[in-house]
Amino acid sequence: MATSYDVIVIGAGHNGLVAAAMLAKAGRKVLVLERRDVAGGQLANESWGEGFGLDPLHAGGSLRPDIARELGLSPDGANTHASYVSLLPDGSRLALRADAAAREAIRPYSARDAERWPEFVAFMDAAAGFLDAAYRTPMPRLPTPGLRHGLPLAQLAWKLRRLGRRDMFRVLRAVTMSALELTEEWFESEVLRAAIAAVAIHGVTLGPMSAGTGYTLMHQWLNRGGLAQRQRTGGSGQLAADLVAALKRHGGELRTGAGVQRVRIEGQRARGVVLAGGEEIAARSVLATADPRHSLLDLVGAPELPPEFVWQAQSIKLRGSVAKLHWLTDGSHDLPEGTLAVAPSIRYLERAFDAAKYGELSAQPYLEITTRGNVVSAHFQFAPFALRQGDWTDARAQMERIATDTLSAHAPSFADAVRQLRSITPADLQSTWGLAEGDLNHGQLILDQLFILRPIAGWSAHTTPIDGFYLGGSGTHGGGGISGAAGRNAARVVLGAGA
Image (tube, helix red, strand yellow):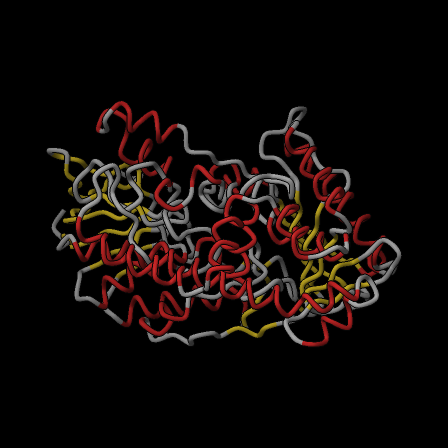
């Protein structure tokens, strides 16, 4: 242990790299340790042959603008496909944008909805702005919050009040509402309501009738900048490369192929880590960006933690039900560019979710499709990590057939255009990417795991019962999706502690 660091960051995903780069920029001696041979976590590119390189897990993603500015990165860097297109059973397509064109697209389904669309977009933008402010606000340590939380919370309350009385109450109500209830308050067209509700359930094991999907709609709207995915030039892998470059530019170090076996604890304080091969590396502080359940129970271990805290950590809900499919085609797939959704009705989406509740693969899934050149990619819901019958070795082929057939129903030439198909099951998400139970968010975005309750009630400020050991992954406040907010918040806590 000749070399000692100020901070060791476990995990080179986007949150780990954001946190590490900010710590290095602040003058800390930082080492990032990554289990895989490539940095980037969920952002890392994959290549399955010539012409078949892609972003395996996320169709888009962009750091919060203030984070990009602080790290000297492009504030956007995204090639935005503004259209979000609902593929309908009769062959028609509803294209939604934030401009006047959407009103004319909506008008055949409802003249009233067409007139309300601009107001809805303005409300969602305002709600997303408030949520962004909430993610930047340190959550108080309950049940006895410190004085340092008072001013940020007051500023957040003022941000909410500035929405105006009507929108303030709309936002507060929407957090607990279902997507069904929220969209019914705005629109009468089933087609339009379903297209919006699909975004609310994207990546979570919830249906449009589940409480709290009003919140997840606002969360997705914030991360996407609307309904459509923002596809970066160069893909999400370019964002990972930019973050690695920022880390190194500020003097931080990165080691890949260096899995951490455990955090070294002495006197209830983190003193460094032990790698899988037995190597020990000393540090004044350790920041883990893996899911909080793994970080606490596996890397630290239950014997080092208070019994009630261990029970709470064991109770963190990770319920992945997402799969990804990528088809290499000859280009004649008959699908437009943009973000496409197979979500024709609220009932359709709820039935797809019903299958997951019983450990079954959805026979009529909710798909979100994006295209990049000859590659067509689909986000598949619902595909539960824990299948009631069989396992993913057997279910993979069934899922691939269902997805291909579903797409072919909307693009008749699609099946004939396919040259290769690769799929990523929830089991793959766990084994390859380290996402426990295939949960992309390191913990479900549900009402009892948000804000001051994320990841554990009383421990939302990125600290733990172990001095010098911090959490900063997607399973903490501000996390979920590609934004970097959780990593930024954790870095600020570490710096505030004098690490």
